[in-house]
Image (cartoon, rainbow, N blue to C red; front, side, top):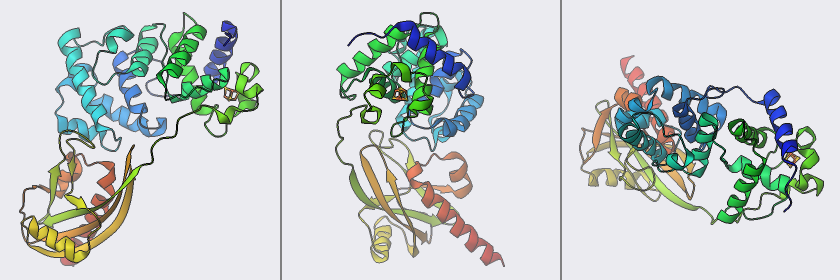
Length: 358
Ligand code: SF4
């Protein structure tokens, strides 16, 4: 694959970036801690959604020392709704390494950053290039899309050799004096112009040198091996209530949603009678079981198809943590998958409380 003239692509891209880059609270600064936090958040959510999380996170945990010392429950509460909670835990573990081994400042090379828990090639490249000006690629999904199109490369992007080839192409084009801007500009072009289904080639600064555009097939790239279909699991979720408290349990320390609080649940879709029986098996004396609206939640490899019951019990019991509703809503990190049940149950209980007082 012949190289393109280096200066042409970089100049066109950086010129466009200077005019089109969106304002973001983590842009235009070189604090590696803030860049690191923003990059981890952006791996799982869109810029608009990440901004609020980022500002709250940085206000409470402004540096690695604060992050290293934060209690896990508080950390997960700050992360609540972002998903992929292992990333939050890895952030804290990495912060502890940064404090223990690097005196509280992030290490200064991509190679050292890669040694931190939860930091992969992309994050190491992004932090090192943006914060420290190191010449290193930062290849995320946006960059893969832009570069496979510019190069008309139909390699499978789930394969390491394709990703390596794209990283090398990025490095060849990257100007020595602005590696961070160049990496960010590629990502921004992928986010705003070189869109997955409808690339805006007419507005693209790279259209004159884009081989997929010339070949009339941008939307056919990148090539990605089909993933195995997601498994759907039916579940019944119990919002068990007694005397102003609700029952929670902690998920196992490994696996999906590891260590998060959740409402008790069991496999399958239970009828009301089965739900009451289940509550009794947990050692409760249920008074009623009111069906809640169902929710679906899609994870990376599986999908939960959930029904729910609001079960009123005579008194707290069973092997659960009983938590007052105020504390539950303020301090406990519930997975997004269960927040719909929490909201609906809370509304029903508040309504009942109001009508009892009238
Ligand atoms: S010309 Fe089209 S396909 Fe090529 S990089 Fe620009 S937007 Fe993407």
